[in-house]
Length: 161
Image (cartoon, rainbow, N blue to C red; front, side, top):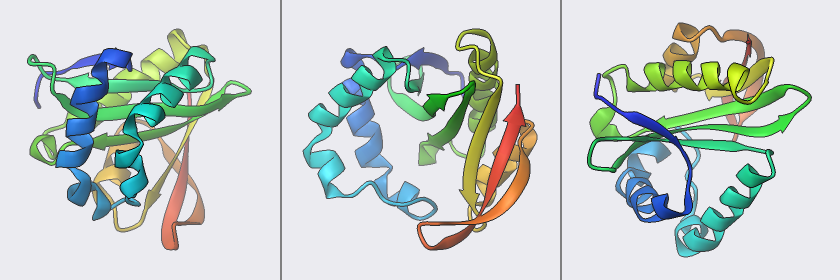
C-alpha cells in the first residue's frame, strides 16, 4: 500500500485534482462512466461548485494525497440526507492494486460516523468492476439490490455505521 494523507477538498487542490483526472481519464472510463469533455473544459467552475456543496454540508469530498501533494485517489460522500450518503471512490492507475482504496474507504467510513454524524452509507458498482466490488466487500458493505448503472448491470450496496 502507498502512504497517503486524506484531506477534505480545498480550493488549492484544483491543479493537482485536474492533473489526476486528466492522467487517469482512460483508466477510469474502462470501469466507470466517463466524466465527458465538459468536465475538463469547465473544471474551475465545477471545482467551485463542489466546494460550495461541501460548505453547505451536502457532500464531503476527500482526496488521497502522496507526500508530494499529488492526488492518488478520491473518496466522496455525496447527497448527504437523513443520516446517510452515497459513497464513491476512484484511485489512480499507478496506485491501483495496493490496498489504497480499501484503506481510504475505511478511513472515510470512520469519518462519516464520527465527524459527519452519518448512520449509513450506500454505494453502487457495475458487475464488471471487480476491484470496486472487492473494496466494498472488504469495508463492510453488503449487496442489497441488482440495478442498472449507465446501462450496465450493477449492484447497490449498503453499510450501517
